[in-house]
Length: 183
View 1 (cartoon, rainbow, N blue to C red):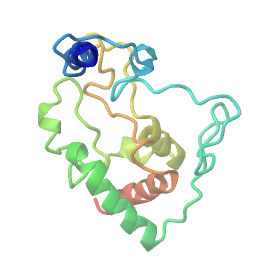
View 2 (cartoon, rainbow, N blue to C red):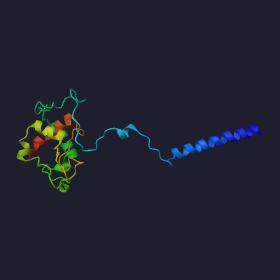
View 3 (cartoon, helix red, strand yellow):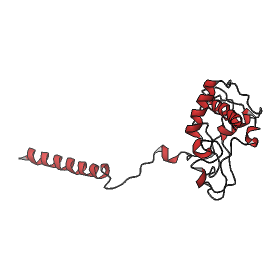
């Protein structure tokens, strides 16, 4: 009988311990555990990108080096490059700039302050290939956006350096050069 009472006490203690653990395991009582993802610095979509660390080179090679001027276009404007650029333009650019590249895309109707650029215009076509490449890479930054301070790119072009590889950005530049001839 004594052994039975001891087993009963042990099982009762285990039941109390298990019930206590179940309360916490099934969030009946919520405990906020500190995780490192919550306390580290983070950035939202379309926030100003961080500067490239000094003396670093991207995995796909150096696209351009800050402070050394505009890069030169290393991709020949052959048929394959222009075809890839046209396809990439339709995927990444046409929603704002329009299929005709005149700034009449479906998103343009919702942009109140600044409309997308007419990529067939003389002003845009007069830019160098390197200037176009840097605009595609870095976007058009608006640090004085007081209307939506959390979205500094509101109404302006976001950077596409995370969407397009260096080669793809040059292909888009080569495609944009054909738009002047198509006018």
